[in-house]
Length: 224
Image 1 (cartoon, rainbow, N blue to C red):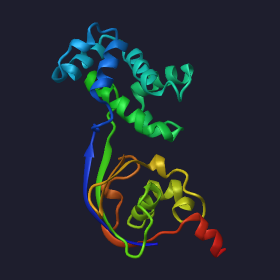
Image 2 (image 1 turned 60 degrees about the horizontal axis):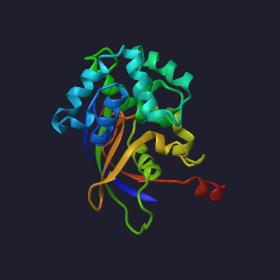
Image 3 (image 1 turned 30 degrees about the vertical axis):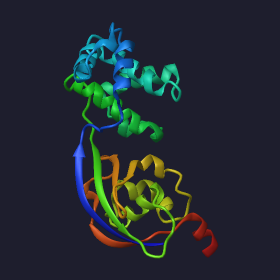
């Protein structure tokens, strides 16, 4: 599969929209022992939540948020450990289970803003990418997108070092969902990609316009 790739734009952000919503804010206020959360006007929710969060010690506040979002994925002991680790470390970049890095990023940044920098600041990359591929009927998923991006990256960048065999089709790319946090189609040929700046940033790219030939594990097996 050949794809013409053009990287249109990069943004570095320390907050992502659409992760938390108004319902989350009201439920979190209740979790932080705030009375009458449903009576607060929408425009005041985030300010009141920040105040409620900072009524707790940093690690205690982290535990409340981790329980709210990740109690179905982490044990009580894991949540307690992470709540202390994230005060000093960038757990959204370093935690061994990369499937929860997206959640950890958003939890960390809510704490970072509420406590005015007591937690480490972490950043995300938002990319705008145009793809042109003729004669192909396969929809663009995260595996195809990261393999397309891979062709423009410098050889020594982190993505290449972590996932070389998966990117080249020698292994199934089971980690594609972990690398790209969100993939949104913005027009017929254009996409918005959200990922960790730790994994991909503008400086990692050697080329911003190129042709990528993508190989899948099944194709690799047939060629062998």
